[in-house]
Every structure is written in structure tokens, then in C-alpha cells.
Image 1 (tube, rainbow, N blue to C red):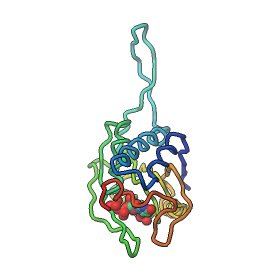
Image 2: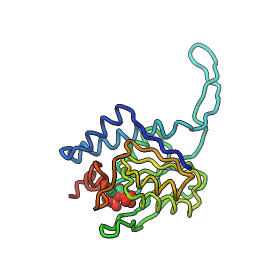
Image 3: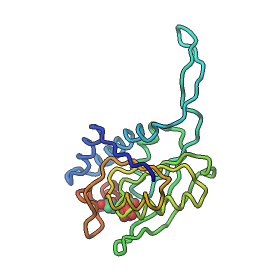
Image 4: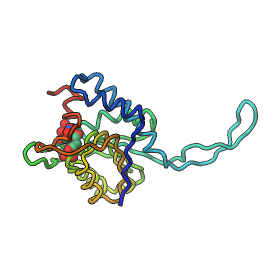
Length: 209
Ligand code: PRP
Ligand code: URA
């Protein structure tokens, strides 16, 4: 079974409370999503392999550690996942970016695919899939399946808010994928929204409602 990590750092929780508020406008929402994503990346990358190198300080030669040259990719689920990319990139600037386009049909709540463009060597990369919300878990599961079909093997999923139901679905369908969440909320409501959640992440990021 995969590992689920809830990142309950005070700065993450503080910023999360700000984006939950319906009074937070799209400009602040965007900046806060970026900042939370950057802070979460610190935890998501905790197990990166290190290698020893010799360097020379102004005082003497010494052996010290750097991140081993592992290739990474960030894959946002469109649209709302786009809001998390810059935060992750600010700590992993050499990562390549793939895009997966999925939207939830409002009636069936099932994800509908409309785009997939990934780095050519995706099978060689450690992949962080980003999407602010895991509600039913359908979009995250489909994105992970699409990535596996293209050969990706080392996958992690990073989201801001998840419903317990959605996490269970992801864990069942993708037991090999570790999941990182800032908050596991209470439940889904009858319309498939996370409670208390933050509303529609895509609309709040891009000001489309
Ligand atoms: C939202 C969110 C997830 C999905 C979660 O996207 O960003 O991708 O819903 O719901 P699920 O777990 O039930 O699949 P949405 O479909 O609203 O598209 P958007 O990002 O383009 O607004
Ligand atoms: N997608 C969102 O953006 N918000 C929810 O609460 C559920 C799905």
C-alpha cells in the first residue's frame, strides 16, 4: 500500500486557510498556491538520492553532498494543476514539464481526457503529478494510468486538499504511488465538492466564475 503524507507544517496550514476563504481573490489565491506548492516540494523530495563530491571552500578541500543527477518531471493535471508548477519548479528548476488535460464531467463526475504531452524520456524520470484537489480521485487515477501507459514508473502525487474517499480510490488503483497532501478534509458533498474544501480550484485560480 502506498504512503499518504499529510504535510501539517504551520506555514502550509496558514496559507491553506487563506486560500480556503471565499474572500481571497484570484491574484492572492495564485500566489498562495505557488507558495504552498514550494513548501510541499521540500517534503516530497525528502528521499532524493544524494552523491558525494569534493569541493574546495576558501579554507580547504572537503567532501560534501549534492542531489544525484536524477532526472525529474512535473506533470500538472490541467487546468488547476498549472497553479502548482512554478512553486515546484522554484526548487527543482531543471525538471521537465508534461501536461495532462482532464476535466470532470459535471453530471457524471467522471474525468474526460483532452490532452497529453509528456517529456520524451518520461520512463527515465521521477515524476511528480500535481493537482490541487483530489475529490472522487477519478482525475488523479486517470492521470496516473495515462502516465504508466506511456512508461512512467516512479510516480508521486502532490495535492493541496483531498477527500478521504478520493485518497482511498487512488491508493486502491495505484498502490505504488505515494501521495502528499496539505489537508485531508472531511468528505465530499452531493455535488462532488470537497467539504470544507476551497470551492472550484480552477475557477478560483483563473477567475473563470
Ligand atoms: C478539478 C481538480 C481535479 C479534479 C478533482 O478539476 O483540479 O483535477 O477536479 O476531482 P476528482 O478527484 O473528482 O476527479 P476540474 O475537473 O474542475 O477541471 P479544471 O482544473 O479545468 O477546472
Ligand atoms: N474539484 C475542485 O476544484 N474542487 C472540489 O471541491 C472538487 C473537485
